[in-house]
Image (cartoon, rainbow, N blue to C red; front, side):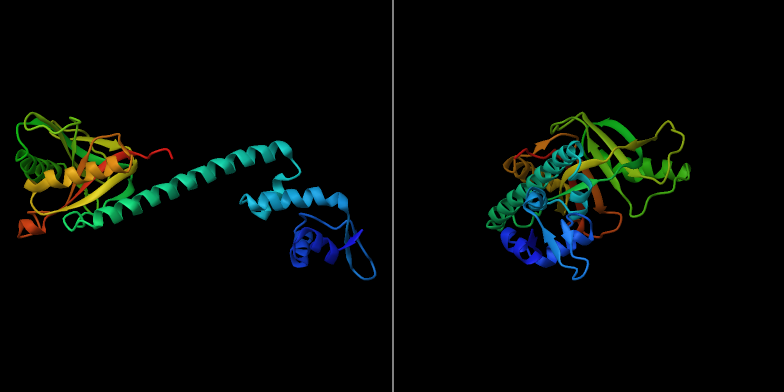
Length: 272
């Protein structure tokens, strides 16, 4: 038998750690002297200690190791789940690294530095919506500020705060005319559909590239060009309809220069 001091030297592990493993029942000494309280270990305990140390290096907590180490079936399942978790973490870190590289690259150009794309989730929401095919983009404001507003007031709909009013483009490409749009406004709860407004629940978007556009809607083309180029260079894939979320506009700002819109593009993250 080895004293706790010798056993710690053999395995390059502190006596404090060995005592802690004993206290939590993870690795108890083979023998404890009743008179002195000295702990003694044997070479037969080396394989278990090595397994504990290996699992700890893999990122498992001591509590997890204690629960699975003596049950091989459970241990194998746990390791598979841990491997998936580590892989996800690696992918997330790779994504962060790619964003840093692209942010740095674009920041070298003063003209592009005004854009700062972020990736975030957009929660599941209940909306009142009006879907129409319009001949030109100028009609959007009339739909949202006039038709939608009057109908929600008539139906006594309770709006969500902060207000979330947005447009979804369903064509999948830029069009100059016959544009399939859906104007949505977030509400607290569904009501019975009217001839003008439909109520529905929109699923969450797990990952959306979001970028702020400051100023007139006439300059959207430049912002869209930037964000789509940014998505392509980061190896993301657009997988859903783009939204324009109107934060500030003619209803609360005097100057077009103060208008603020968030463009939201659903994406699929790359596999690294």
